[in-house]
Image (cartoon, one colour):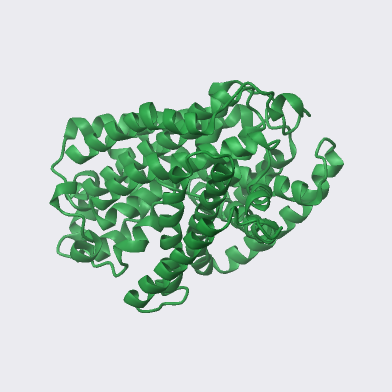
Length: 492
């Protein structure tokens, strides 16, 4: 429990001090922002700073820092170290610099920014990759909430249609009409839930595994998991530490800010807030699985069912959504159940809606089409919706198959994080600024994603020792390329 309190203080201090260093390195100024210079009443609209913060927080969070943190803590107290260091020195820097770069370049998306600094080939690859990721996220976050809602009331297909209709509205309408009004409310409910659960945790003050008890793989030692801590932990906890998905969402907010000086609070601050969400749920997971907290929050018949069974069967039954439901209902009562429902249902729905909107913006930049008319937005949205419907139909017919695909999505977000950090490093070096603050996390994330690619049984499944050697070679080669060239874009 002490590790939780130390980690919480560290995240807050990281925002107070390190965010100012990052801000000073980037150097925001008083130039007119895209929201002012390119105001169109659709995507480029000045919104109040607090509202942008709430939207940014919900866009980058969703259920990621909840579900990912719960599963990440299965590896043990090493999750604390990753959340704190990853968030302060990796994720928040990644979000701030990429978000500010987008604002400097008229609200450009990740693919266009990558093309500027890593070359046209990287741009084309990122257009395809990010489009695929956005549509996969959108489709996934239609069916799963529909399943949960149909268990409460109504038919599953009815909820699928309702959720998809909401996606159409968030994709097509001006950003201040739906997203600007609905998202802040959901963000407030999530923050309230996290604060309430954090207070209960402090009051309970359970004896939990601490960082100084060892940073080994608790999942292998106590739960029977087979995945190695590296790189699995660093892919499992993405949102809440480092996630490239954020770089696809920040451009939407970069088009709504009236001053570059808002960037530290909105981009860096939202990431630190997400880190706190992950920290609270990681600690709850530690309490639930290592302290035996599941016995305190579950009905007697459930406790009797699992007494004497292996720890592995415990985590197989208590998946992340079940843990959220059970803990919130037990600790916060009926109100907690409502908050859990918002977390499990509303958060993924809003994330899915933002993903489809981001897909439209990616296409608009790729084809150079303005989005001021309904016709132009519909022209780009229809193919996005068509692919989303096709993926949704496939998911309904193959529910287990989509779970496998989702593993690649989790890895894909970290691939985007590594690319974004390399891109930011190139920009900072070109500007004669301290690029080490993005280069070091870029090197680390490259090692993570390449090692996962080589060692994961769902991809290549190579021997663990061999995969470490190969990933180290790839990482060294990427670093040498960066060191020897003025930019990755030299051949352009």
